[in-house]
Length: 109
Image (cartoon, rainbow, N blue to C red; front, side):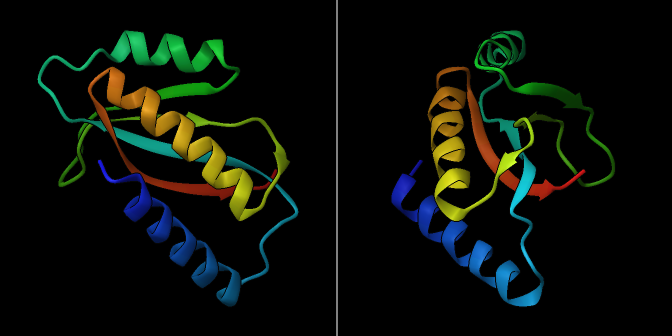
């Protein structure tokens, strides 16, 4: 895991999205994580994320997609800095439980 590389990629994708459409001022951000170890602790990662106030949902593997954990923030301000703060925290926490970051998105209600 190279956080500097991950941050640079997040910045690039966020800028590209911002150029193609208007980014909402407030949104829920969802992050996808995939198991990187056979012994990944799905329950532990879920409990740790929920203890921090995130909503967690599991998705089974379908077609070419891997099974993943999706972690979603509450509705709140959206900016690159806020997105990265959540992503960095969750990436480091996910590594403890055997998970790696696999993507993110956002939606406004």
